[in-house]
Structure formats: C-alpha cells, structure tokens
Image (tube, rainbow, N blue to C red; front, side):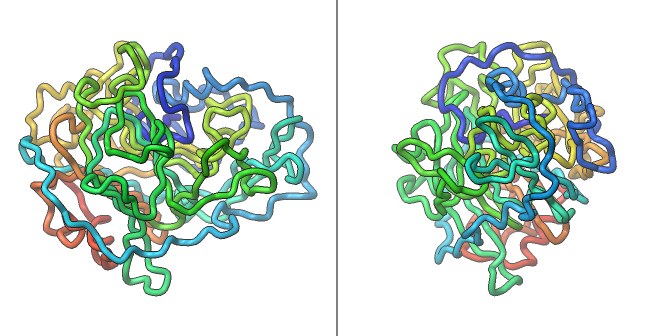
Length: 471
C-alpha cells in the first residue's frame, strides 16, 4: 500500500503540512497481494495489515493520519440500482486530446554528470476485473458502495483485465525536490492506430506556454509552473480538458473555489519527463521549514485515477479505499507510485533509491523501499538500476508481474538529468518504466529521444516496451 511520496499527489495541500508520526518499514522484496491479483474486499474482514506496513509509503499513512474520517456506517447495499458505467472512461466528454502540431527543439540543458547506463522495470500481465467505490453527488447518485449523510459512493464495476485500472483517466503528481526541464505525453492517434501523437507538452525554455497541460498545487494554478518543485511541495499535472465539478458531476467532485479541475489521460499513454532530483538544499522554494517531515527530501512521481485527485485525496469521502474508515487498505480506485523516495526519518530511510509499486482494488504489485542495505556509495555513477539481492548494478532490466516483485530498484538521479519514461500500453497489458541518461540514449529509441517529435510510430512504442536497461 504505497502511494508515491514524490510530487504528483492529488489535489493535495501545496505546502508545509505536519506529517504526523511514521510507522517503521523494513525492506520487503515480494508482492503483498495474492498472486492471483484478485480484488480485496474490505467487507469480508481483511485485516488492515493485508498490505504490509513496511510497504506503506508516506502518503498512505498521511491519508490515515490526516483524513478526519467522520463518516456514518454504511447501510445495506442497494443491489437493485447499480452503477452500470463500468469505467471512468464513460465520463461525458472523455476523449483522447488532439495531437499537437509540433514537437520539441531538444535544447541542451547541460549537466556535467557522467553518462549512466540507464534502467528499466517492466510490469507484465497488469489489470484485473473488480470494482472500486466511485463518488457520486449525494443528491442524485446511486450509493450502493457506501452512503452516509455526506458521502455517496457507487460501485464502479470493471469487467476487463486490460491494464485496469491504469487505463483510466490518470493524473500525475510531482513532489519535490525536483527540477523539471521537459514533459511530453503521447497517445494513440484515434484515426491511425499505427501512430501516436504528442498530445501534451511543456518545456522549461518557455514555461509559460504549456500545451495541452494544466498544473495545480503549490500556486501553479495561478502562477504557472516554472519547473522546480521544492522539498515537500506537491504539484498535480493533468490535461487542459476541464472537468466540471459541482452538483451532478460524475464522478462527483466538490466545486473548488477560485479554480478549475481537469481530466487526466485515458487509455494507452506514454509519459516522458526530463528531470533531475537534487537534494533539498539545491532546489528553491521549499514547502517545509525543517528536516523532520516524513516527505523531506523525498521526491515522488505518481499517477492516480483522476477522480481521486479531483475529489481530494485527503478528504473523508474518496475512492482510495472501499471502506471509508480504513484508508490504509488502499483497495480502491488506484494509485501508482512510479518513482518514490521514502523518508520516514527512521532506520529504514534511504534518500538515494526509489521504490515502485501499484495499489488499488486489484491488489499490490511491485516493491517497497530497499532501505539502508542499498548503499549507493558502493556503486559507481554509471549505475541507475540496483539489484536488491547483492547491491550491485542489475545485470539487465527487471521484469515483474502481480505474483513477483522486480527485485531491483531505480537510483535517484541527485546529480544531472534523466529521461523518466512511463509507458502504459493497454493492448499488451504492460507498464514499462525507464530512466535514460540524455547522453546515453539507446539507438532503439532514437526516434523518440531527445527530439520528442510531434508524432511517433507504433514501432517506436514497441521499442520502448522492449527496452531492458542497463543491457
């Protein structure tokens, strides 16, 4: 049950909140869920420890600690009226954004660090049928998953196993410290499945001109995104497609004061972000005044099902868990901690290594933090992927599935830049994660990097999916 502790959370607090006490968390190298990937139903008495505490990230515990769960006990389920909409894709107006007409100029952002060997973790056979609670307008919704005086949750039934729920509308969250230079999102062309188009883009050389992107958190909705995210600050990144929150919205989200909410990216998608993650003192604009916070100096890149972000991740009525009083079960709509440094200010803290895991109704896939045993001071600067069994450079890219952890961890790029590549491919049920040094781009993906063109072929997507770095 790990939620990214990096920077993309949901429409969270932007700055300086007290994180509360932390639970200890030893390294765990195996998946916490049943290998079948079957949904966890909180109603059958699954203990709160069904997802191991050692795998719980800072955000997981923040949900439990902060959310004032003042909710009445649910009454009998309404079995006569069900939410027959099985996917968040059925939200009115959800479409693939139109492709942009130009890519990037690929400027040289510098960086004097040694070129590294790159890293990949490939997740296969991802997706499961099941259900999660989806928020509804209390005045109009069918509340067959949960109902109280102030909270209405309907069952969103998922019948497919094709990358579900990560084929849903997803919003990215970024937690600092982080220095972002470029962002690009590609999706399949609706009229030509052999090509993928650039649908969203942002570049530090023209930060005030995002294309197909919207930012929220840390005052970015007012001031724009300049590229840096200070330690313990949170920024959400979504499409520029406005989602009309308020009465009658489906899934329901309260109308925010003075700003708009947005949709994420649905279906297959490829995220590419060029960024570095220097330590806290090297990134301006911190959202904390001390070093004792559980998110201090702990960058995070995360993906969440869009309705979780729009409804408010730390609210008492949201889709994160089936039982609204047991957020720690994390068996709801889904959050993917793609690259997360975990800082619990205890003996398990390691600020140099990412953990990577998916949580939701389909169970837990991935692994938690490596802890102090992954001592990167013993590794050369060329190492991006660490074999957790021997704390050496992994022999090749790691492969994982719902029944097996990757056994490897990404190394935080505290010096220099990396391309962070996140491919979610629905037809193959594959999630491919990669870190690539700008000066050591594999020939197989040269049609994508560093140019980030306006369009790429399906063969380029296959080349990304087939990467097994460092070999």
